[in-house]
Length: 252
Length: 252
DNA sequence: CAGTGGTCTAGACCACAGA
DNA sequence: CTGTGGTCTAGACCACTGA
Image (tube, rainbow over all chains, first blue to last red; front, side):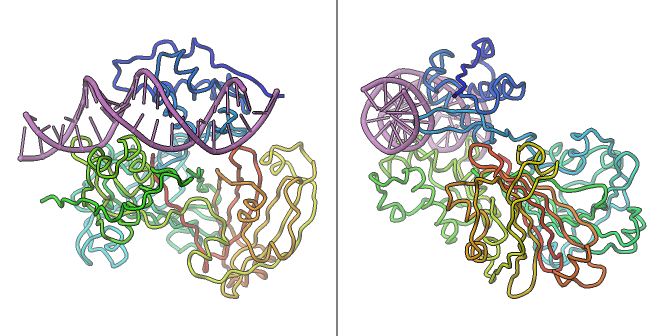
């Protein structure tokens, strides 16, 4: 038996045509909220595009674009000839691109950071390649240790083009790197990550307070801004007993 | 100095209005090809939406949707008031959702598989939770060892709902799991992955022919189909000297 | 200022699923 | 058959960029 459902019209009052937020985005937000609040439950069908547009005083393409956003997010499914319904297991959190600091905040932990080094170095071959610089040209290197609830979680080494930064100790202690980039007008849009594992070095063993014979989880990452310019290249080592990397992938 | 560029009209002959492939997808494919072939190079601007539509005999929304697809893929950037251009470092391969087998094929290696076990088991708590089954209810379990070029790469343990499968030895030896699911009409659309590292067990040490003290890279994964139904839950162990996990994330 | 992408409208026809 | 989403058209107005 199919569960029929029409979105309560109350949830849509107050669409603001003069807002800088596009109408389709306002509509998408309202639908998402009703799903998150469990008013619309998995498997329930929502009203069809045309009817919804008429009720809201919107054209079909506008409504359609709102629904499309949620389909891309993994919250709704459209079935030709049938209708649009909420997926059985809606994607929980939109993982997306974030740095460790933001992940920790989001999961309710108390991150802190120790800055080990901030200096200008000559890039090695792989780094200059990743950042699209001439081999051996200078770049800014950060080495940080990230803690959560007082325990060391990761050693973070990042290399950035010289024109980005420098950063103050206070900035680095209280913000994620991507936050600091955003504050400088740089939005990370694409990241390429290579995740592996290996035995810990003596230094990692000491710094991360690892148990004997514990390995480290490693990540090699290059980040690109909206224009496709490489803005950051890093290699990170995580204490595997205290941290794991989570990825939610949605096929478009 | 800006590099002006107009897509050669030759690249657009042969748009097929009667094809089941939508026009916007045909157009997107042609633009992508010119980027991949380096005819359109990073930083070059493409023709504006309206002009391109006129040249191709298409409406603006259709052209726009084609461009939108490539923006979402991380190949183009749109700048209001300026134009649309190729990003500086176009995303190489669309990693997306794939299984290990397909990854290996794509990177030119010769994968093979040994089936260790295929049986019906009672699910433990975490597995039944992941697959949205009643605790302790039966499910199908596969245990495989994956090789590349004759060397063991990973131990793959997967649990699936009983109504999916069983699979023949031949199928499992010659295909990735997601391929087999597709052949049964199941398309994996969302995966949730947790990646970590730990010391190898004796069994892993033996099976993966690991060096002494080598850790394993681990992945815990749940896959969902288009409707959001959980179709697979697995835990995998990889030999970290021979394999690393690659993720390309594009912010929408 | 002219040119660009961002949004929105009001239609149209089609393919497909289910009664 | 009806109702749904999938595609496509031909316009419109706006916000923003750069000359």
